[in-house]
Length: 316
Image 1 (tube, rainbow, N blue to C red):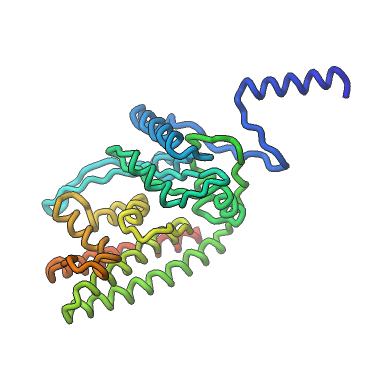
Image 2: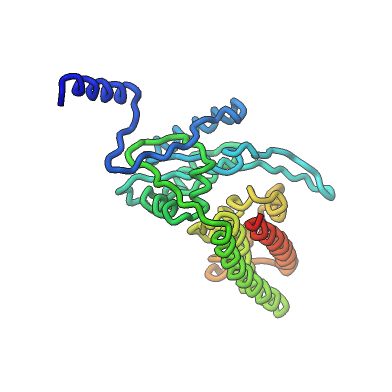
């Protein structure tokens, strides 16, 4: 190599170092995501910078990506009254935290660590996966992750491993997958709901609330899977509810969490998965159970409409 070429290579290396650009090995070039939060108010930009710093300190992640309504600019914050009840709807900060290769902590452990430290008026909802899993999903065209790569905002990038390029699914492929998810999960939800009503009629309250939990879990998963193709690894209804709220305010209003009574009602349903089966002190009244049956029926109806509209939208 000539002296001139050597000097150019050295200068280029020095420039890269001065700009702190990550160096990637192999043939794959890094996918470039948007980094700008300029579409958000100053206070939200400051909150997201704080949240990113907390996550970096607590987790040492590979990447932190903002997705959902705050990434696309469709976030909502408002209060409204309906039939004498005041509801408040606040869009979450939805974050995909990608862990580094060799991080052996379970995803749910990292998720809980982050959410427990990030307490803001705007709720923080976190999904955690390792870089190899995310890249596998992108290369397979899994549309939850391909949408994030297309619309997400990179809050932090350690730069040690790039994201894979996404493989877009055809509308026909996406529709077939969504329809399969819907048919399986909504059918299962209806079966558990029917069983819950039968249990209620013969006074089997604990069995009834467990079946309502199972129906609700499937309803929430149907909504998430039809809209994103992603299935969270959790039975926690609160987590599933927060992941669903960006698709419809009506969903969030079924269990509004706006009073002690409402919080207690949803807590009874959440505890239906474990406590209703294994704890002797778990108790639910006929009136509370009847109200839960009514709410789950409403949730099921809203979910069916939302999913049907989403599936039909793949044709347009």
